[in-house]
Length: 303
Image 1 (spheres, one colour):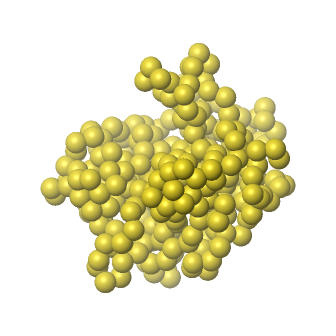
Image 2 (cartoon, helix red, strand yellow; image 1 turned 90 degrees about the vertical axis):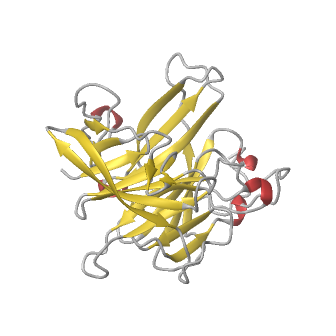
């Protein structure tokens, strides 16, 4: 079974699998057939870890390509310590444990001329896109939250493994917040947070929290055809945020990562945190088929 990384907390999972603690348990009670959840290992990267004079942490998204043998992690410091960047590394596994991680490359995110992208970036989720014999090395797909307080919209980007930007896709018009006082659009630092690659170059992008006009419960999952650069999204569905873990009084719950599973399903990671600084996380299997297309809907508040 191929292994994939779900989240920047550093948990390495089987390809449709994860569990907080404990043994494998089939998720057969939710009507989709059994899905095994098995923790393979964990590796912690210190927030001040350094690679060739650049600070690696904090990290906002990671992925692992078992065929290529590399892990990619994208920095979340918004350019505070160095230019927006990602890192390639190789993990060492032994006896179903992660026993080492060696960083091998730093990837400054640039346009084709080598210049940095000239809009504020807040990189979040990142995924490999395998290309087989077409290009050889995989390309990378990542999302940026932009800056809602300054009217910078979130976007989806593709770059080669040398970090040069190749293509990009805009957020739907319903997501654009023109200023910090906007009553519609994404919430600041709660926008494009994760991306899953489904099938042949189809991407599903998720906001961390609901749009301002959508209330507090429904997050939008937006689908893009990656064959069409700069094209508008092709569909969108509403994802209901789950309850906080038992015993945790929260100030916020958000959808922080998506991973594509076989058959079109998704594995979703939600995180909650409390004013007291306590955190909780839950994993859900998501079945998108048959969901109502809400692309272009002005609001989901009364839907």
